[in-house]
Amino acid sequence: MSTLDRIRLVTERLQALNPTHFEIIDESHLHAGHAGAKDGASHFRLIIASDQFEGLTTLAKHRLIYEHVQDLIPHPIHALAIELK
Image (spheres, helix red, strand yellow):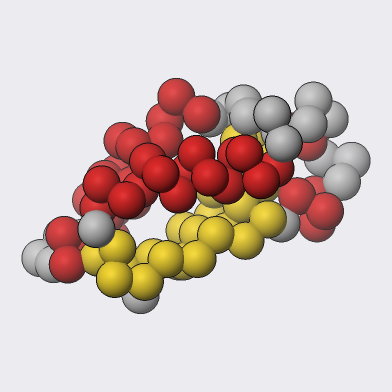
């Protein structure tokens, strides 16, 4: 699975949150040599905002995001850094 395929998959999954802002950045090159990168797993940074986050704690927002992608971790995605807007 290519990096572009992984980005598309995460994007499709997180559309369920109806994001008002959405960016996904491949940071895999920053983790070259890292144990999680050795098998080709990706490291992504997610920047996201959604009205569905209203009233939730930061932890609850992260849990909501991970509910949609948990089966992709640790492979093909090793790490997902989340920035909430």
